[in-house]
Image 1 (cartoon, rainbow, N blue to C red):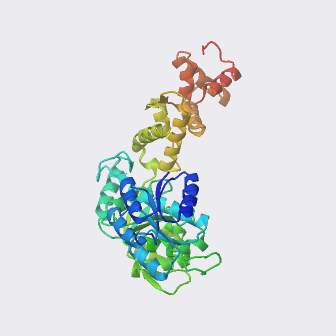
Image 2: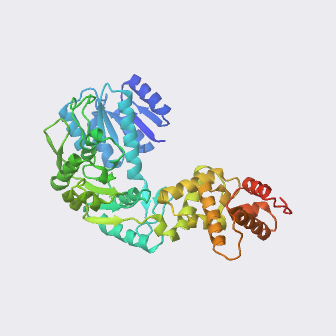
Image 3: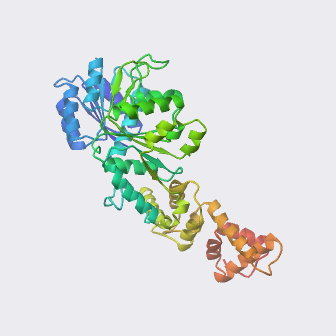
Length: 456
C-alpha cells in the first residue's frame, strides 16, 4: 500500500481518484490548492503525488520544481487539461515522473500510479551490503558471508561511483535486481531516478514503446503521447533485466543509446537525448547467443564493460543458514507469527537441497513454512514434501550401500522406520521428524508394514 497526495481544484475529479485508488488499497489525501499540496507533501512524505498544472493560486510546474528540490526521489505525475508540447518538455525537464492529459481513462491513470509507486519503492528502499553499509530495519539486505559473496561486495563498491555500464549475470533467483539497486544507491546518481524493466515480461510489440515512448497515433491504441523509461530515467539509472531476450531491432536501438545517448519515440523523428546509466542483467549465455546470431556482439561489448557474476545458491551453501534465519524473521513479522527458531533437522534438510530456483526459492520455502508452522519452532514437517522426500530417498541410498540388507525396497523402508522409532524411544513425533515425513504418513507406513510395540 502506498500513500498518494492529489493536488487538484476539481473536486469531482479528486473524489473519483480518491475512491478509485482507495479501492486499490492506497491511502489517498486530496488537496485543492498549491499551498495545501506543498504543506501536505512536506508533512506526510507520500510515495507519489498527482499534481494538476493549473491551480487557483499557482502553476503546477512551479510547485513541481520546489517539490523536487525537497523530495528528489518522490515520483510526481503532472495532470493537465491544457497539454502542449512545451508543457510536456518542461515537466520532464523539471523532473516529473510522467504527465497525463485530462480527460484520462481509469486504466491509464491506474497504470501510471502503479509504475510510480514501484519506482518509489525501488528508489527509496535501501539495499544493505555488509561491506558498504550498516543494516537498517527497512532495508533489503544482500546476505552472505561466503568468500564469493565478499568478492561481490567489493566489486559493487568499486563500480558504484563511476558511470560505467554493468552487466550482472546469474541464474534466475540469485538476486540480480538487489545488486543493481545497490549499485544505484551507492552511486553519485542516487538522487536521480532508478527505473527497472523486465525485457522478457513485456511483448516485443510493446517493449519499444516502454523503453523509448511513443507519439499519439503512432500505432493502433496509441491514444496519447507516452514517455519512455529512458526519457524518465534522465540523470539516473535504468535496470534492464533479462537483456538477452531483446529482439535484434531493439538491440540495435539500445546500442545507439549506449553509444550516442539519444533515441526517438515511436512515431516521431525528433531526437531525444538522455543521460542514463545502464545496468543490465541476464540469465542467458550471451556468448552462445552471439555464436547463434541472435545477440549482437557489438552490444555485448558495450554492456560487458564490468561483469558481476552471481553464484547459484548450491555453490554457496554455507550462506543458507544465514538466509533462512533472515527470511524466518522477515515472515515472522509480516505474518504476526511467533516462530522463533529453526530446528537442527530442518536446517540440515535445507542444507541438503540444491535450489534450482536459488535464493528466491529458499525464500518461498521459508515463507510457506512460517505460515504453516503451528509451534514456535520451524521443523521438517513444515517444509515442502519434495524436500522431505529427498531426505528419505537419500537415507535409502545410504542403506542400499551397506552390506547384508534385504533385497526389497519395502523391507529397507521398514527397517529405516523401525530404527528411527528405536532411536526416538518410540515417540512417533520425533521419528517422523527424523525421517522427514508427517506423523500421518508414519502411522500409515507402520500399519502397512505391521510395525507394533511403539507408543504414540
